[in-house]
Length: 125
Image 1 (cartoon, one colour):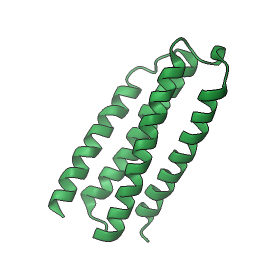
Image 2: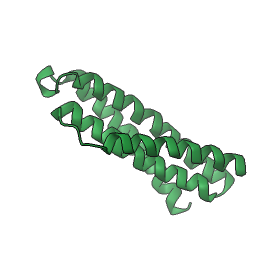
Image 3: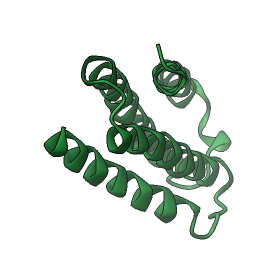
């Protein structure tokens, strides 16, 4: 199995694992642990992370079946980066109340671009 596929599939599994762990923390930590409105922000980040973990699994499976098509591979890598930036920044803000400037919007933009690349890559294959 090509390295990029193994990396995307492992990242998908780790993202899902961390999403479940984060869900447990968000459900059980006391309110003072979160910034104002932070618990809801963290829940949204968990939801976004879990959906993209599933998407990364799907991309990995698609790549195994269709061969390692370049645009699909790039979409998977971009999605992994966008998910880490977006969700990481939202988690940070949820806990500290401090915004990391353009990190979350940049991650979100990368996620949108990755979905576009995936669609085009699938259409071209």
